[in-house]
Length: 260
Image (cartoon, rainbow, N blue to C red; front, side, top):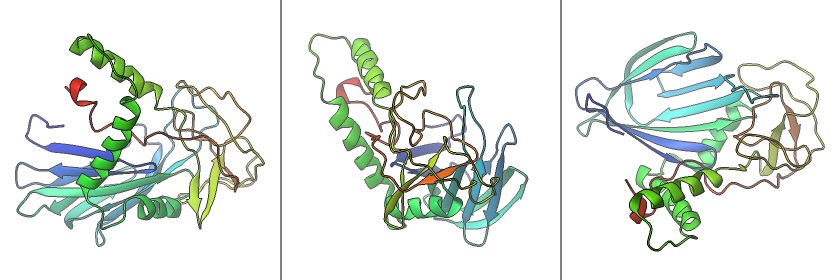
């Protein structure tokens, strides 16, 4: 996306993480953090160019939603910044190419797990273009299952846009913790309150679930999907979830015939 002021923002997803690339038109290279409802926490580390936090923002369908934790790492030197409550900003030396890259990951388990999810899915050596190609390849494989003849460009756009939304759900609710798949359960009773770094633990025997795009659970109790709420507080299970995710986020673009 290119903004009116010339700033260009790009994003490429994985299962629990994403890579963002910002290209700045002028001397100022800053990133702003905000949460419009103040239902969050934010900690900036200017020395290491990282940040951590959480969000409790939920939709009207988010019954049982849990806290979402986040960890992010920038590749450019931080030259300034500040934070207050849920708001903050960092300023960078964007170099000659005027580009700053952010690697960011989420977790329903803890801040530390979000950091480990980033290590697993987008390590420091990963390039933006490779993450983008991998995501594009997944979506091309899925959307390429349908071949259409005689349709207009608008009809093709409608078809593939609908297929994309269809394949957004269900999503994987499990995360790999020390080599074992675990998930934060919205169904078991909590034994503690949430903290800034991890939700309240609670045990669960639930194993699987499936959801519709609206977040309705249609199977036995089990891990959440991103379409359903993030429960708060949280419980634990080491069972491997049976829900699957076809791709982590929006495609880098529809098939060539439908790209706009």
